[in-house]
Amino acid sequence: MNTEQPIIVGLDIGTTKIAAIAGRKNEFGKLEILGFGRAGSNGVQHGMVLNIDQTIKAIQMALENCYASNPDLEINEVYVGIAGHHIKSLQTRGDIVRQNTDEEISQSEVDHLVDNQYKTYIPAGDQIIDVIPQEFTVDNFQNITNPIGYSGVKVGANFHIITGDRNAIRNINRSVEKSSLKVKDLVLQPLASAAAVMCEQDLEAGVVIVDIGGGTTDLAVFYEGILKHTAVIPFGGENITHDIKTGLGVLKSQAEQMKVQFGSALADEAKSNAYITIPGLRGMSPKEISVKNLAGIIQARMSEILDFVSYHLKQVGLDNKMLNGGIILTGGGAQLKHLIQLAEYITGLDARIGFPNEHLASGHMEELAKPMYSTCIGLILKGYNVYENNLDKEKSNLNRGNATDEKEDEPAGRKMKPNGKGVGREKMKKRNKSLKDFMDSIKGGLIELFKEEGDEQL
Figure 1 (tube, rainbow, N blue to C red):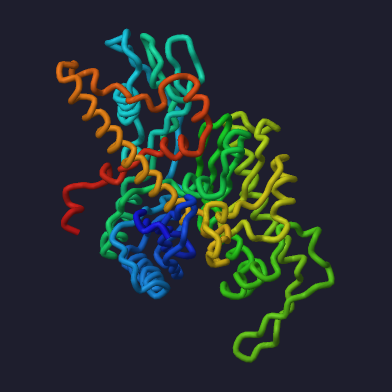
Figure 2 (figure 1 turned 30 degrees about the vertical axis):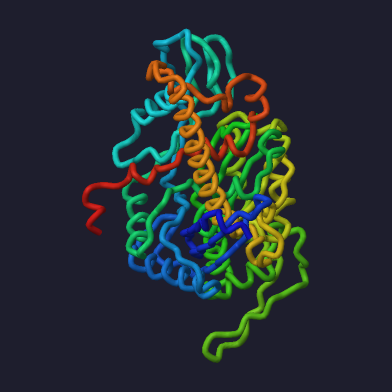
């Protein structure tokens, strides 16, 4: 095991479960899971923390279970996923006219372009969570993935801006910090799930990630290597369970058990002569439930969720066969029988289940390869992306410092020029459409945006 690598912890605060997973990369770049704990989630509805005290208890229980799996672990800071129907996205455009047109475009100019987007008007009470560059333009050259190294008068970009409710974000922070943890960063859940289940070919082919959780269904659309759209659909597995409970007149626990054991997303595939016997309440006679009726209820709600997926694809003009990678279904709800067939029928796209095991080292627990842990595994991958980028910056600064010793008289402005990394069109072609570029675009350090003076005393 590579003990030089840090241990990074992902914390997935969901509507039905809270999961904490600790992992470290081995010498082959695969994640070795060092600790895993989960607990039932209370106080969270549709991905939003409504009861902070109950959420704290659930987080602490998940942590205790994680420590129980590995007593040597020490967890101080975590990467946390954020979702909820308060999450919205919009497209913007930004341009700057360069002052030093003779010099190559530098990282500081790209950062300036991104920072300008934080001044975009959004409704009161909302907060910008992330600004993700899509494609850049330099003068008349378009569809540039990375403009560093180009020369020109004007540089611009299209941006995907993700916003969320300020209070919802603050409630997540408080819940984690009152559990004696530090929030290292907040990551949008569909982007974390995408990182766990996608490969480079998916990113290039064009793909839709549909993460069906307990309270929400998270959506991320990629086309030509670029994040085109994100959305949070306010329905998930809990809604299906509630529909079964109401429609068949059973307890919630019974509805959940029937959904998992006997549920199907296609009523036509269910046997018409099959029945489930439910014990009667307090001496009442047992109840017989038709498996076909159960499947009909599940299909109605899943069809509604997939109709929303189709609607969002139409919104961004990607509802036809342009997405060669099709749909990747992940999250706990993706384990329903015949869901792939229903998704293909409603959207007209090829579909498959996305498992997070591609990035896991061999010998991991079978439980962790389930789609319901995609978000948590993706949060660890995001953490490693931040760590590796910081290492690269340190090396770059060290190299730049050595170069400065040789050229004491070089003007200060030129010391900020890139040290060759990513410069030149051939190098950019190699980096184009890579998963690392996508992870890099999810801006780190966002947690500082949501800190307010009063929060320090909590």
